[in-house]
Image 1: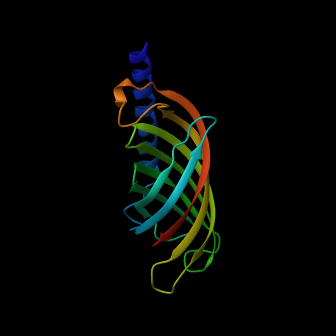
Image 2: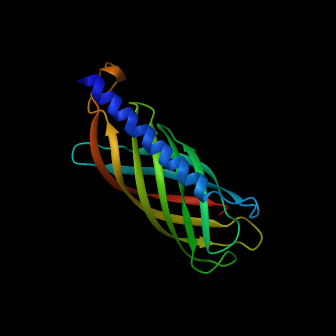
Image 3: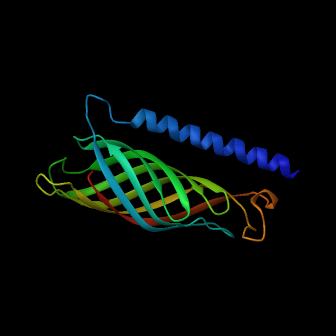
Length: 183
């Protein structure tokens, strides 16, 4: 019975990673639009369900976004204290690429927690503000809410191996604040 649950969890995880990779390919900046690099720092993100949680701490992501226009598709890879992440989405700049103003973010995030081998896929919506600094890299502050399915291990720790712990599916929701430089 446990082996079937583990196989099902592995198939689900592979499907989430494949969907995220497909989204990244579709939204990646085209070579004609050279794109710009950005760094995103997310000090703490909490995702909770009824009985479980999947936090991420000090996640730093490096990504690439389309350089010009109000709609900027992006892809990013990140790592934190206890997680690895892949993100793809679209930034929406309300006032264009060379002005301060409100910013919106729509993204998909696949996440793997290193400690217990847990994973999740989350859809997110963020609102924030972007400061364009006349020739320097733009800086933005973003608050994001997320929700999505996760495969979690209710009992995991130094005394219990990952292979011995059951996998539980749960729907998690939560949010984060992040600081972005360069989009």
